[in-house]
Image 1 (tube, helix red, strand yellow):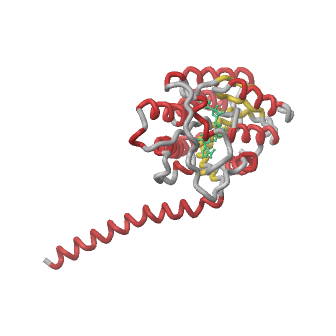
Image 2: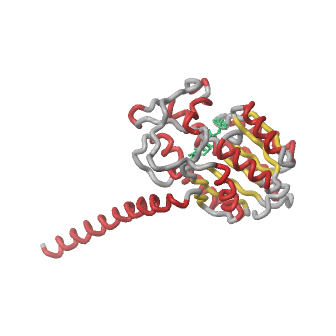
Length: 285
Ligand SMILES: NC(=O)c1ccc[n+]([C@@H]2O[C@H](COP(=O)([O-])OP(=O)(O)OC[C@H]3O[C@@H](n4cnc5c(N)ncnc54)[C@H](O)[C@@H]3O)[C@@H](O)[C@H]2O)c1
């Protein structure tokens, strides 16, 4: 999709941070935006900022972890705008701590928002998008927000988050291949560190997962300044325009991925060496 003018976008977690920045950039490109978020006052404020740029915008209170809530969002968006061309499954939460100290409730909260939130999004919107494409309704693209933590797993005190984002990457790749023939693009967004509300994600934790959570500040790697999402949003839209499989945001993280890939391949080298040694052993005996 190379032109966003008069397209309709739904952004979950659209009230704050990366979602908000994408919404504002889309508005600048002429798209209408549905801001779906569990934080209703902030969603309304962001929808107001988006509408001030001369497009239509609507705030819809949504808990992505609840299937019925996401279904109601899809219903409302289609009713108001007649179609949805861009779905950003972006809502996400994080908490830190070692895997051993995470409770079952911690796992349920993070997985239900970060993974199930995206599954609910696709399950609610895909049938409607398919129907609209069959009616000749143009193009469609889905962007699932993962993280660099969905590509590189390290002991960074974010094990639950990392597991959720790896699942998002795997899910998104398969979805991309499944939908390619229908002309529906799928990208997985893998941002690195940005200056957003993610460090205080516990503010939105639902009562059923224990209610609002305050954690001491997360350890942030030294020498890395979190980036301004407003600078990153146009890069993200470029990735959609080009229907990229991965949308990365920080060019300086290339080395981290290369290093990680080299470690994977090193284990193949180890396997080759072990098999060669075993063969030599057989030949010598
Ligand atoms: N900030 C970063 O450094 C960074 C890096 C990599 C990936 N990400 C990912 O980017 C996405 C956006 O996060 P952000 O950094 O902009 O954080 P943010 O906290 O600023 O924005 C997240 C938004 O999601 C909303 N939200 C939380 N739970 C929700 C729920 N159950 N239903 C609906 N909305 C809910 C919040 O109210 C908030 O508006 C997340 O998926 C996050 O994992 C962020």
